[in-house]
Amino acid sequence: MPGTIQSIERAAAMLRLLGSAGRPLALAEIAAPLDLPRPTAHGILRTLREVGFVDQDRDTARYTLAAALRRLGSEWDRHDLRSRAMNWADSLAGSSGQEVLLGMPAGAVVELVHHVFRPDGSPQRLRTEEQLPLHATAVGKCLLSLAPIAVPRPHELDLQRYTGRTVVAVGTLTEHLAAVRHRGWAAELGEHRTGVGGIAAPLRTAGGLVVGALAVEGPVEELFNGGGTPHPRLVEHLLNAAREISAGLGATR
Image (cartoon, rainbow, N blue to C red; front, side, top):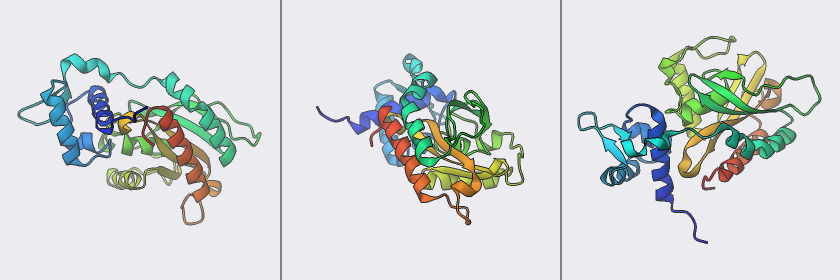
């Protein structure tokens, strides 16, 4: 059976992005979340405009989904994402020895749609449907950086301080998010809860659109070395699980 056509996957991802944004988007705002060079993104958008799938404002040059295609803007089904991720999340908890979280954007917060207990038998509570801050958690920073249209921009957030390590300056947070985009995963060391850190990776659908984030959370000293770098084995297990889940969602490996 022939493989998928990458340009069509990218065009579909752009349509979903435009449909879910709730406002006109500039070229850079479309290219960045899909990890595309601007000339490539511009070429696809020009084609979508010419066939009537996308509108472009003459004054601002920003793009919107054409009226006939607005129904494509519905968000990814949470129950479907959870069911596709459960087995890999369970496996990740076993290989890492830590809690595993699956989060999706929900306005100005992250909502946990799945939670796997730390497999050491210690007292724990189920965290499904818990809401977490975007700026102070690994799962939140992952979405802020790699799914920026689905969440508020950093300067629009209430940068509440939770611990002495919480980033509350927009400039510093922006630098953190740039680092996440560069390496492809996010981390935080005790910014939301003292002594508890996390590492998170994006979950992508066909075309590369990020619809959620998978995270490992646990004691900082168990996730990171003395220099604040996460243990390579944990990162490897996390990224492998995220790739497998994304493949099940239609993303190209």
